[in-house]
Image (tube, rainbow, N blue to C red):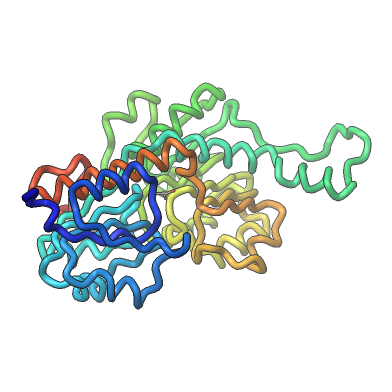
Length: 328
Ligand code: DGY
């Protein structure tokens, strides 16, 4: 008998058929597939009981209640996401639960970050809306002017894999300087000749501020009123990481009063952002529905990577991508 077939796992959503096949070959799979919506909390708490592994998404709040409900068999949690702020990592560490994630899927998110930056800096959404509403008059010399990347200073908050991938894609636009802020300098920064600076210096000197860091207790709401006060009034803020890094009421005030020029958000708090949210009333704020990694290739790859992590973990093999919970 294949030992791993005795392992029971819960998959919280319909995922790519390739990943499902991989899992079903080796495990007893319970899957929430009745609708393409997050599994309701009560169903999650019921279905996880006795499971050895959990395959989850960033929309699932995997807290101590879920881990308790699973019981002592739960040894592996694998999330189909680069971010893992939805998982109680401290409890996982205390209970020797190994956590896997999908950090290497960066092309799609980096592309979307560049796209969003250009959409905002060149005011494309405003432009499209003006065309649709009949506001397009004759060509005017000073109308719908945006900001150029050429000769600009771009500040990357969190120069990890995605931050670096974003910077490499922005470089050919003629960016003059890259600044970055991390806990420590990164040798990879040399690839794009980026300068390690304090958060305050980055805020003061950047024309574009791009948030690429994970959401942690340290980065939660690091963009609040105090940060906006330090930014240039011409600055553009882009966030494709996690909504919780920005204090959204403060961002609204900063955009409304012209303290900063514009913002592009692919992530918000909450998600989904209610359609009557104050940020959506602003022409200088573009909000996308968390589609950073949403290309077919990327989502397939993430689904397979998360399955590989889960299967390796269940067989006591090193996971291809394990969250280093020792440092949390
Ligand atoms: C992730 O993988 O964490 C991304 O936010 C998904 O787009």
